[in-house]
Structures are given as structure tokens and as C-alpha cells.
Length: 264
Image (cartoon, rainbow, N blue to C red):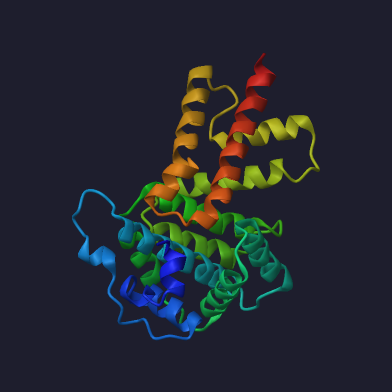
């Protein structure tokens, strides 16, 4: 049974406790805050079981939309543009009507005063076995959301920095993720010259323009491994977000091919 199957089957409360379970329960109109977190039972196991994957998927989904709501409210006002960004993420995930309703309810939960950001992030990190690839994907989704309107408000950047720190990323790693996502947004805006797109391609891959072919290939392969959709889903990325991961690998490949072509 998938994480969503457990939610609609009424057994979600036994899968995820803590602040994320409480927020999911509130969004569903149930009291799940006393639920048992299966990852606490499974701590120390080498392999990730099916129950564990479903717990991670639930936590990832819940954290994504609640933190998006919190970030939207960071500057004190939730704009129509920020709501449109959240709706666009929902469309990209191709959620069914019930899942769409849940995502919007979680987004609203994140906008409430006193949202326990650090507690939610720590639970996500623990539940996911501190998977760097999953945490990076989570952070990249938030960064892309913040950049979707073409601007990064200082309050949004502060929330993103707080998320990165809580999830175990250094300042340098956060800056790298932010710069790569900015380059991706710029590259696909459709308003720039070929020379500008080439410059963005280098930034997206995180390499200098004078990098050798071997260094370029290593950077490309590393990013492709980090964003491999099947591997991310196996680690607990919700199946509904697989298309977003696939889009990311397509962007990485496009940047790599553009640079290779320019060097021929």
C-alpha cells in the first residue's frame, strides 16, 4: 500500500507522529499527533522497508507544502503570485482532487503563526535517514518555489537558509544549490541570448567556463546520480514528485549537451 493508500485507509496515524503527523492530521481533520513514527521503530536497520518508505513519503509531502506555506508568509503577506506558485507545483505533481485538497490544507497550516519550522525539518531529516539526496531535492523544490516569481525576497532567503542549516547543508552547499537553481530559472526564461544560456549552463552544472572536459563530465554525472528519479523514489521521494525529479535531470542533461556542443 502506498503512503496515500494508508492516508485514505485510515492507518496514517500509526505511520507518522511528531509535528508532521500533527499537521497532516489537522489538514485531514483527525488527531494523529500521538501516532507512532515507524522510523523510530526502525532506527538502526540497514535496509529501508516498505513501511519506512511510506513514512518518508508522507513526511516529505507534508513538509514540502507546509514549509512552502511558511515561506510564502515569511514577508508578512501571502501574495496571489505565491499562491499561484503553490498551485503550479500541485499541477506539476498531477495530484488527484483529494490530494490537491490536502496539499492546499497543508499549505494553509504552514502559514499559521507559530509554525514549528525547525521541529518539522528535524523530523523530516530523521525520518528520511538523513538522506542527502532527498534533503537536497527538498531544498531545491523550496528554492525553485521561491524563485518562481523572478524575485527572492530577503525573508524567503532567510527561511531557505534556515532550512538548509537544519537539514545539514553548509553555507557553501546552500549557495551552490541556490546559484544552480537561479541559473536554471534564468536559462529557461526564454528571454536570453545563446551566450547567456551557455553561461547559465555552466552555473547549473556548478563548473567554471575553463573547466576541463573530465571535470565537466564528473560534475554532470554527479548531478545526474543525485537527481535520478528511480533512486530518489526508492529512498522515499513521493511517487507524485517523480516528474519533478525527471524534469531536473532533463535540465542537467540539456545544460551538459549545450556546453559540449559549444566546445566542438
